[in-house]
Image: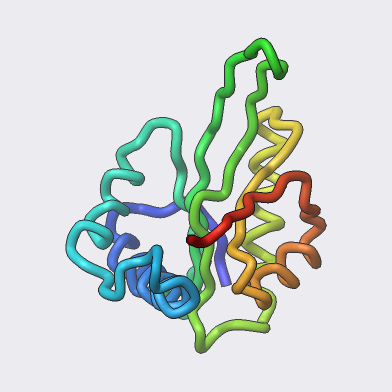
Length: 155
């Protein structure tokens, strides 16, 4: 297995995994996520690929993309409430269903942490939906901890 930054030719493979991730979200929160992985969502990966503040990491095994992470540099200016912050955010993350629990996600996060350190970031952030218990456990196993929580009141 190889972990590297994506080439344009990797994007269809990334989208195949993104489609699996989207299905989990659409089933977990059908009130929020569209059921179909449509053309706009599929095309969004090309926008991310061209975005100068984003990088797409991929896990490749036997010539196939088996995992990915969309990384984005976030610059938050200071405000009356908070200090300025600059960090690396994991915008999207996924491992192909047929390749889970084989160390691919862990290898992707090792790559992400190394890249973040090389770039001088003092933190990597992500968010995860409460219904996605497997992802929660995985991220906690990678050393992530909750520091903020979004809550809702349904009418």
